[in-house]
Length: 272
Length: 272
Image 1 (cartoon, each protein chain N blue to C red):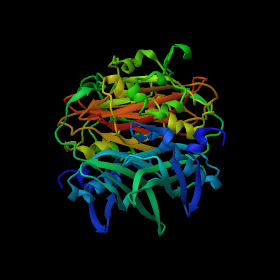
Image 2 (image 1 turned 135 degrees about the horizontal axis):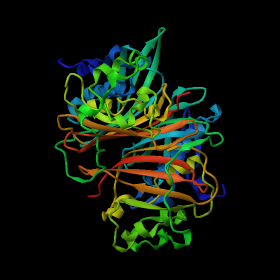
Image 3 (image 1 turned 90 degrees about the vertical axis):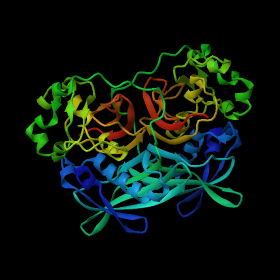
Image 4 (image 1 turned 120 degrees about the vertical axis):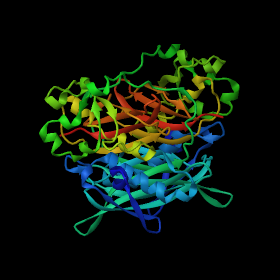
């Protein structure tokens, strides 16, 4: 496996409807393993488990985050809820050992199918107009206290739109937006499983609201709408509803042709 | 039980972690039982099953629709995924008998908690400006072929914004929007379980795109953000991404004070 993403999400069948993986310490952010990476590991496990059905693509994946994942071995158990000719719904659960006990990290329901060739676009949300890549901000330039807690950032070639990256130098825009260009640092091409990661790869929108700190996700649902074309993707995160200690974070990803290829919404807790 | 919604979502414990309900024929639309009503039945079953935890409110509910529900008896089996001090995640499955076989209708993952008193609103999407209730359109005025297939409409006191109701007279606006005022016909007050219904109670946005017909939901996730205040609610549905035979439909519900109390996004198939 040439690319670190493929090594990171690699799973091996280890029993009936069960797969073994390893959460890589390279995808840690702020002490926990990045939720998008965990989603991609589970998404890949379901892809492998359902391989014989020839429905390789996650159309919709809903993940309920139960406890923070840690680097180390992980076991993904799966269950086929309904196998259909065009779409199959399955459940998955990622567990890790913690002090000799099995602890569930994330519980997932998902529908897989075959995205095939990208079908007609009748209407879509246009991508944001971003400054050219070279005028955007490498997240590697994030302040030391962010960078040391996020080896994750080194996996990505993310370039953030400077209009919404002022939080990195103590001047959040207050808009509740984070957006930018995305590719993997090692140029691994994007595909539907990688999009599950991309949907939760940028810093949380709460940074742009002047609220650094960990914003635990309760639930995240990803919809993958098409196979992405090669090249830089555009990613936009936005929150419009912050209330009662919670916020929603919507994410959209467009490929290099400007086509919307994935969306997600998550419900998360405001940092303390 | 004074109100038909309460009779419609009523469930009785029928075994370990299992409840019996009855899908009422009064909530049928286009030959199938309305998805929002089925969601409310499952949501109420989880509320009953988790009652001892004093976490009565659905914070997030993700439903994967597997087969069309039919009027008649239904069984809801539940499983506690993770019980926490403030939030509990549980799974549920609604099944019905069909020709002597058990068929799963909908599979659900959800997190429950206690919404408590509505907390501070730091930012929110403002409600749309609607014409006054009396200038909006009763869905009972829908064309005969819609009405006869939708006894559901008689349960609601929905008043649609006429700007996006032209489909009812063959002139869809093409905006991909359906919005209006909502209350129950018998004035049953809204609460978090009823909001699960409200999020999928209006006609599909595809009507406004000139595509009548059934738009099967693959997945719908609801977030309930606060207890609604009494009075007319405002509901807005919109689709922004129609491609590859699928569309997403976002819904937001505001209570009579203008507070956003619930949101949902669903992924659905375009009508044939």
